Length: 254
Image (tube, rainbow, N blue to C red; front, top):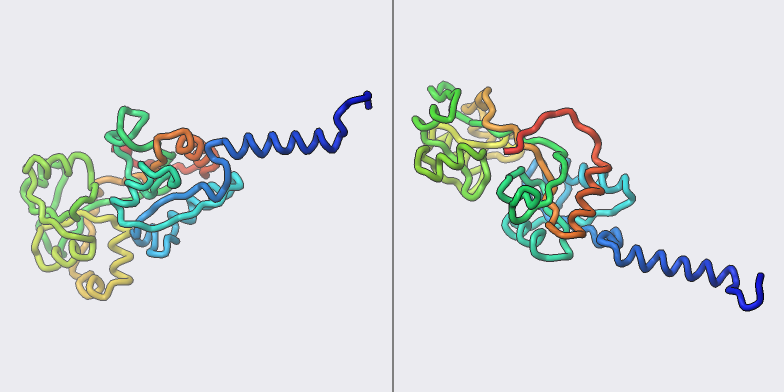
């Protein structure tokens, strides 16, 4: 070694410090910083935050060596935290909407690739005359929906314009009980949610045999992580997309 040169162990220490500083200042500096909000929406996400959607999100990030902290909040709070609080980098599961897609002029989301699907359709009483081929056919019926839910773009637009009469419920269980009591002629619900409630909720189980899920779906929604519109959010979204297992199942992006 030349006189006055830096000892090898000192050089290695300096290089390690530089690497740590670069990592610490990157958008995804440490695994514990990757925090996502979600909601209680069985069977996709349970009250504990566990469930098939969480399993997919965690396993996808795990491929990149990242741990994910998940916390359940009421839906509106989950959205707000993911959008406004830097410690929360995203929210799931989210339906796609161009209105909130920051890469299409929206105001909130950097959408991941779809990691699942949500088949949404109509639940009706058995023996009902309800049937539909186009949205105009729905004008003849009272349709039960859950207050604040995104259902399907065209249906929601027609309800907002008063072209379709909506019967509002506070949650999916109440919506099901209303259709069983003939308070509406059909309700909008995710098929998997109905099957879960039929198995787990005694009130729904009691009326389930009197109901049927219409064979024509309203929409097959994709399920997405909505990452915050920031450098950290973009880094997390890109990492998620790079490690997400390929799926050939087509989903809607309405």
